[in-house]
Length: 308
Image (cartoon, rainbow, N blue to C red; front, side, top):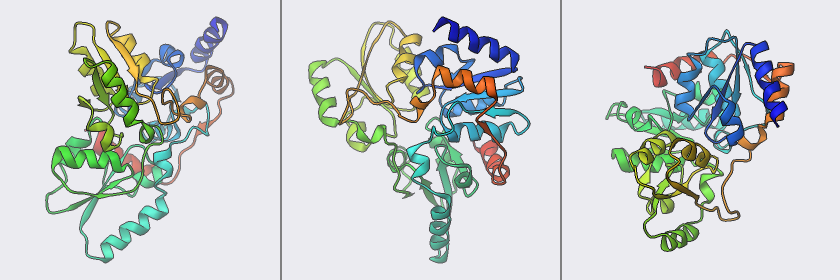
């Protein structure tokens, strides 16, 4: 393992590369990354990279975002098959037809799209949001317009609750956050009655309603930092987030909320990226994210939504 990490470090220098890693990556990848973060933090970090190459340890839509914001840089993704169930739940052609149907029926709306989406879907949107800035963006949409929120219905429901804006919700969900077991969560709360439950807003309502705090990953980090004395936290998000929480606030104890079929929830797409694949992509320069025609329009919306 030590030899592999050294090999990656040497290749990173040789290839003039910066490694970005999402909080849902394995801890060993987060540990050697130059930047770690949620989608919003990493999108912003990508614009500050000075090297000629970005290696994005995350999923496909994240690497696409990095390329859109850095058209002149080479962007590599360790495994091109690292997809996203949310992005897959909203194909661009279906969204286009649905938008046309709404317009034909006299509906006046803006499309607010979660960043977990393809570039083609982003290009059909008025706004792009992450869990970190979604509430702020929703409040920017003029009150006389409806909001079509895609693709995550659970995040959309949460935003309806906190903003009071009713929305047209696309029927998509995250395969990781969708399957948390409310029965197991309640059993954990009975076993640890003083524990504090954290839930990502991609979780269904039955998980959110039994949580003490609902927020994206960056918000979770800020929240646990407010507790100076050791606390037990029950965490309902992708299990690798516990590594990041533990590394930043090690005085606490973190317990993953189980999924219906497993002891903890890990994203199989994120798990496709490994140290070996990271080494290989630096070595070969593949897989590379290439500029696509829809990136120009999507880039304009990303910049307006995330960088201003």
